[in-house]
Image (cartoon, rainbow, N blue to C red; front, side):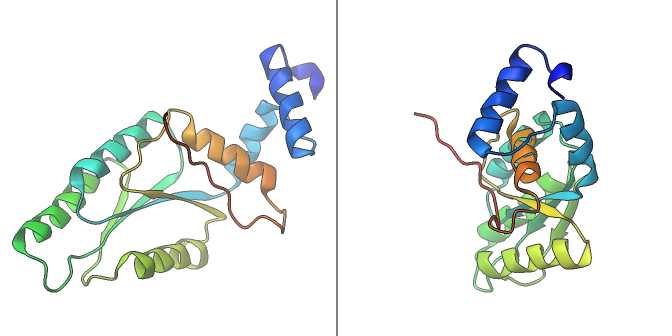
Length: 171
């Protein structure tokens, strides 16, 4: 596939080959393989509607074709009205984005239980091959989803790898 890569693409491939010690297919072939892997994006939200909106806006800029699922956990039983309103605002924010699948819990599950239920549903019921889990307070770089897709593809089938992570911070 070297003949179909030009200039900067060839140097990227050489870098990937060197650091991942694998034969990496061309960008054209990789984009075909990405589309074959059924991948979901899951976002867990609670009581931060303004953060969720920023996360969803940054996700829209990534132009991902993956299904996006947003789960909004219910307020705790002893939650005050302000917290209840914030949780409802999260649901309304998520529902305002076209194409998202939004679900609201009827009782408060807590972050750990909610995450386990989401992952179980997406892998075992909805039959996704991969799940990109996002928090409701992340602002994604414009190529974030594409980079995670690349990592998923490179390590797909490698039994030593159970997950990939793409975190960073600005300095």
